Image (cartoon, rainbow, N blue to C red; front, side):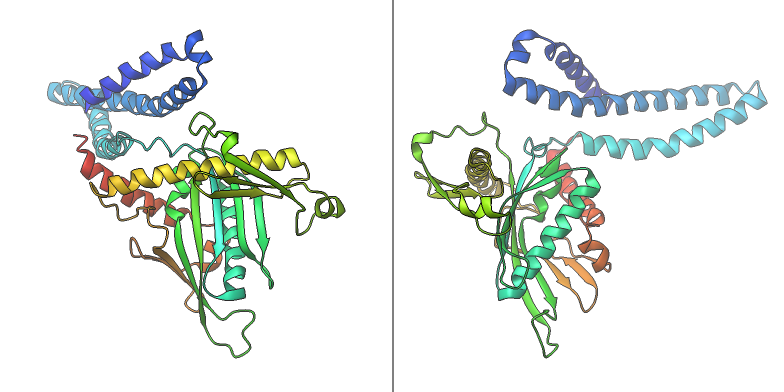
Length: 357
């Protein structure tokens, strides 16, 4: 393990020198990538220091015990040895997971799109519940959310809502939420008390930077229209909403949340860029899928990933067979245990494949 960690230390020292070079700072794309790598390697270098200290403590304690000339020192050495031996295997596991090659997309911000599926008004209400759940979870992580576009349901909730999430390692955390979410409950609109099954689809798109996707504006048709929904007279009477159509692919993105036409156009362009980027990413995932099959892959958008059963107060993730009996807490943003388990399964699979050691 120390050999591998020594390579990490050498790369860390190399990047430390690079990120202060004027030519690197001038190259925005390279500078951002190197800064991210620096941050990831810094955590590993800190673990390396702890590992070296623990191995040194074990060696020192064994020497003192073998000498045996000072009974008090021997007793202290035995305590030090026990502590070090307890910590060492835990630290080795932490380092193994940290050495798994990271997906470069994981650090990106995201666009989340929630769409009501089968189930009519109840599906729209459920889509609204999911939106509330995710915004509360994002708040708990210290991430910022902002609505890009929405289409309200006739009885509450949303037929569709698109929102942006910015923060640290957002895509790496939320990407496993992509897929079909199914709810089983008595709808607010049901008078007979019968349980209905409805669904909503969640898409999580890594937000593309300008240097990730170059869009030729000659390939984009721009339409302006009046916003719908809340926002006052100025929103509903001025053509501030913007719809962008990417002619080569047919992809459409729109934004009507801001009062400024210019801001709406910028937001719509972000969505369009992310959709184009995700399209290319999906092709790559499809190619990778022939080489490996991940239990928690987010590649298949039509896959039913989770069921929310209100009668039993249960949430079940079908990919890893995990059920959590805290529906109220979950719908109020307490997704941490579920997402931690999904990440653990994905990392364990990567660890088997990468053959780090």
